Image (tube, rainbow, N blue to C red; front, side, top):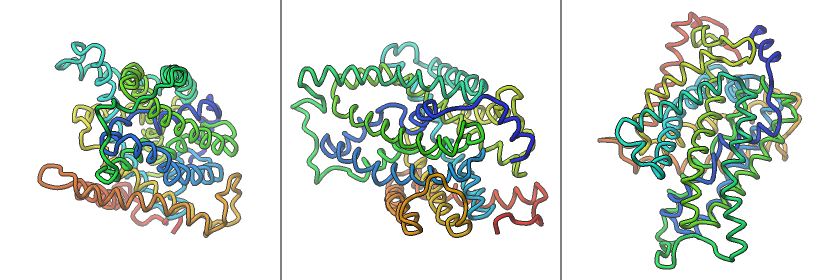
Length: 429
């Protein structure tokens, strides 16, 4: 990071542990949503198993990896810096490419969700072009929120979390008091486990549990990051797991009402928090010469990279009307591939910089650093296999995803030629 921007970030208001937990919760979960699709594919009992097992195979290893790297290298740009430092500029660029490509599918989801939940109460309000207007208004609202700075987003996320989870806490208390729990009516028995679409349910759960690394991109705007990140990661892991299990236990018609009431809050909170993460990537890419220097401009008072915020918001607004019917698996494929690169960086940095100070260290030495990446790798292999079965026109999602990944390689070399870096020394090589 260049000295000017680093100084500006240090002088701006910073985020602390509790707002970090709240923002991470929105980046990962945004409320106990998505359960209906898992239940439909796998049934009630299998859903509970998936909600317990998936975080052990996906969330916990990722949170441990993020905790080590974020506390060892607490720099703006987060996972881009980790991969670049551990594996070289080429892989650092691919990390950012995969994340931003995945964000196109990810960020198109939340305005559509917001409209869908508003339609539960006032269908006339979202009819025709009015739905598009409301979606664009949500994007504009979250953009203005991010321009106010990292502290504004973090503290706002705390209050949105309270508003979001309050209905579920109330429903849980009522359910415990009455001894009645949801999960579908007696007349609508879940499919037998042998007929359940377990892989489909796991992939939806992976999407619901994805995003642990996103907060790393604002490391330069965090108070005492060496301590804060590990606490925020494990606090958020607990909050996410508990909220999903509570949502599934309550279940049934009552859960549907709660989702409709709180869904707008979850969509806004998730979009705003993810915008906080994704918009730091163009900033550090500009500082490394891959994007025009204008993307590195910050607001002098808040430290916000306001040009990156506005440009990213414009691109996401363009993609919003496309909808998100086919976007979930592509998002899991692209974003998951970027997370696997981070696990590779964890191991590479253990080899290349064994003496680096690591306030939090994945236990088990080198074997432990390698082992925690195996379960996420297995889940991603399953995701790639599943993408072969999903069609987009005359092709399938696996082909589209591989095309996007290959484009990242081409764009890297093209950007080096355009920026005049073709003959520059290769950092980390």
